[in-house]
Length: 400
Image 1 (cartoon, rainbow, N blue to C red):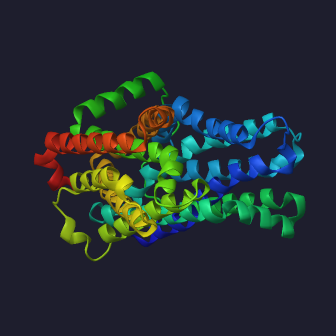
Image 2 (tube, rainbow, N blue to C red):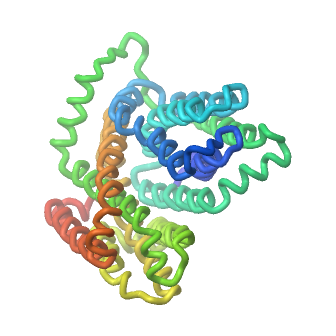
C-alpha cells in the first residue's frame, strides 16, 4: 500500500477506540447520572442518538462528499467533533444536553465515513486496494477491540491527569491529532470549483440509484456487506446467551466479540499479506459466508470454552473473507465522481438493515431458543452466500 495511506491509517486507528469508550463514559459520568433512569436505558438512548443520523443522512452526506474535497471534509469534521467534546464541560450537566452532543457528533461522522472510504482509492493504486483494505480492516478491528476493552477505563484514568475535564481533553486531543494527520495527506483529487458546483440532492440521489441498478457487481457487493453487518448485529444481541453456552458468564460476552474481532484481523492479514496473491480469483465471499454458516450451525453444540472461542475466531476469519474483497470491489468498480454517493448510500442501507436483526433476534431467541435461531441464521447465511455468488460468479472472480 502507498505510504501516504499509512498516514491515513495512523490518523484513524484511535477513532474506534474512543468512539466505543465515549458512550460508556457518558452513561457512567457523574455529570449525567440519574437515579430514576437505569444505565441500560441511558445506553440505549446514546446508541439511538448515534445511529439515527446514519439512517436519515447517510445518502445526503455521500452526495455532499462527491462535490467537495474529501480531505478537507475529513479534517474539518474532526475539528468540529473536537470542539463538540471540549464544549461538554461548559454545557449544562443534563443528560438531554449530552444526548444532543452525541447526536451532533454522529451527524459529523456521516460526512466523515463516506469521505474516508472514497479517499482510499485516491491514495492507493488499483492493484494495492485489496492489501490496503485488509490493512484498514486489521487496524480498525484491532482498535475496536481495544475500544471495547480499555476505552472506558482509559477515559476514567484521564481524570487522574486532567481532573474532571480529563475525558473531554483526552478525546478532544485524539480528534485534533487525527485532523492534523489528515490535513497533511496529499490527496490527488479532482475538485469542482465554485462555478461547477450545482447542488441538486434529489437528482444526485437518483443518479446514484441508477448507477447501482446498472452495475450489478457493486450492488451485489453492497447486499453482501449488508448481510454481513446484519449477522454481526444479531450476534451482538445473542452474545450473552452464546457466552453462557460455553461456560462464560453472561457479562463476559465481550470475550466472544473480541475473539471474532481477532478472527477478522487474522483473515484481513491473510488477504493482505504475502499469501494474499494465492487467493486471487477465488470465491472468497462464498467461502466466507459458508464458514460463518458452519460456525452458526455448530456453536450451540460447543460446550467447552476453548472450542467456543475458536469458533468465534473462525467466524471472524469468514467475515473478513466477505468484507475485505467486497469493500475492495466497490472501490475498484465505482467511478471517482460516484464514490461519495455509493458509500453514503451503503452507510444508509446498512444502518436501516441493522434495525431488523437488532429488533427480532432477542424475541426470537425467547420464543424458539438459541439453537433454533442460530441454525436458522446458518441456513439463511448459506443460502444468501450461494445466491449472491451464483448471480455474479462469471465476473466476480476476475474482479477480486
